[in-house]
Length: 238
Image (cartoon, rainbow, N blue to C red; front, side, top):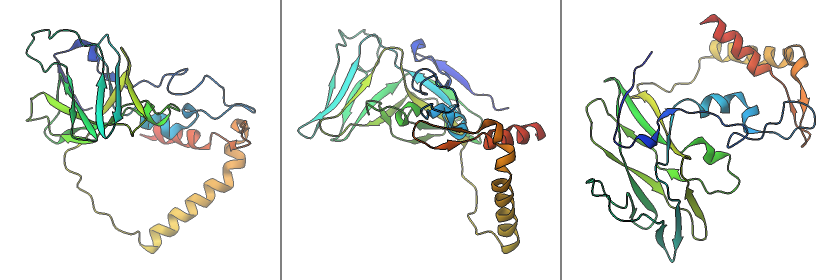
């Protein structure tokens, strides 16, 4: 178990383990059964991937609208007067022609071998409106860096708009090894053959493993719970 400690300058950032909201950005509350339309939460790899880190919430009462006009980033919001707390005001600033920044008033302390990776919030991939802010990936080694950091966001294309709404998650953070120490090598023939055999066995057994959970969506795509069942079995062995 990895312990991550946090220090808040802005309580309304409300860092927490990412929650898949259904109904909400995770999809509609449609059951896995014939005639339902596919939803993001129907996919177990997406569920696990979306909830792997923590989410951060927009901490202000005013909506922020980000657009691009004539090649320039435009940040529109009613910020009011400077609160005089010493933080940058407004807290969002344009950054070149295609990006803008936010002063994140949050300090996360991780173990020496870990780092904090900034990512877009997973609702980016489920929004049909393309209005979700796009946090630019960054790796912060916060075990020795206690400083407040600027998060960089990519601006929408000309004519598009990204929205920051009060109380809505706008980015996520993952906790990962600080140094990606791995070698990428091809499998030898024996291992490749074993993987191929395992894959064929799973494919052949789907009629048995997935029979009770098989359903056909509104777009005539066939789904079943084979992956979920094997995942539960794998978790039971650990």
